[in-house]
Length: 474
Ligand code: ADP
Image 1 (tube, rainbow, N blue to C red):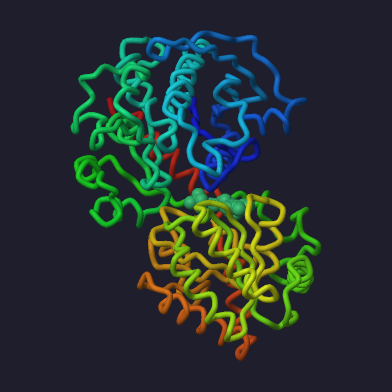
Image 2: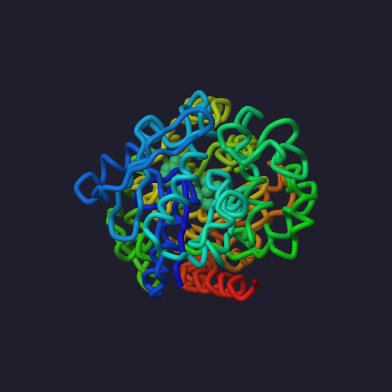
């Protein structure tokens, strides 16, 4: 089976969140399974800097037309990974924007990315059975295949799969973008890719793909409702027979406390002493007071409303008063960054805030913390809770999306229903009570969580089964 994975970020080359973990790990798993898979990602500045010795030019280059302008695509590769280079678009400080907002030309950047991927597939002359696209950045590909490349023999029988990692990010651009993407203005209507006066790249993926997947089973149902549907629930309901939920896994060669190179001490489920060493290291690095026995809670993630920052920030002062320490790593909306800095100043000995993205530090936080907070308003799949369980940091999460089907309440973590600071606090209080007063029970929860299997093999097999189902359809 020949498969393309198209993603705007993928571990280890680029990462801002879970999409990168999923795309990178799925690709790796496919190669392990003997699938002829190719990964397509942009050649960002960070990728160039970190892999300059390994990434080689293929010698392939061609022009991509985007309305009345033309941009050159140069193609680089490293084994089965293709990197799409155009320095105007991708040689930038960050992937999608600066702290002041998204890059103004994201529409043209990712239209270029989508067109380039299809053109490369054409030129390398491999007949791909599946082109697996991810999120709005690759949403145009399914429609391009259906409209612009419909009669090209190389794509005869090629099916497109579109995975929604987060419906909240839709890739909305002004109407003029229609000229750039070149799909014809007849699609600029509510049945097409118009979304309340703008163009939605996500909608292009939803209407164009042969199969739509979401990163948990629960989320595949949630998005059909107005509460989670972001205005697309009607369209998604129309396509509900083509939607499947396939839960995320994590890459246990990256996330393994017994050999994690970012940890001061390694540990296993059978011997947890190294976890204490990691906690000491984390407490020292963050200059937290209270010592090793004080419960240490962490949050790692994007600082956005979706991740539950409103209720987390509201709950923190009361939780610190009952004897809890916090480490928070993240970057995102200014208002949350500001509020977290002000909490840091109010409680310098009990709350450490790192504003930024730091993979090694994140590893230490998963290992050194006792509990992991995920109070998300909604959570399509969520990797944080899976990683936390692997590291014996017990997740306390809202009962939604991925967490609701990966955490067993009271057994491998704690779930709460209502989106409120009170509900979050009550759940934390139960966990902390067990942690402080019922040590044996706590250790059994830790061991149970660490023993859960969220490896990629199961998820990758589910994707392959879904591909096979598609390939038998004409
Ligand atoms: P998202 O909705 O952002 O994709 P997930 O829970 O699915 O959330 O995945 C987030 C991934 O990004 C995890 O691997 C998490 O450890 C990582 N991550 C998020 N924020 C940071 C950060 N500030 N520094 C380091 N890693 C981070």
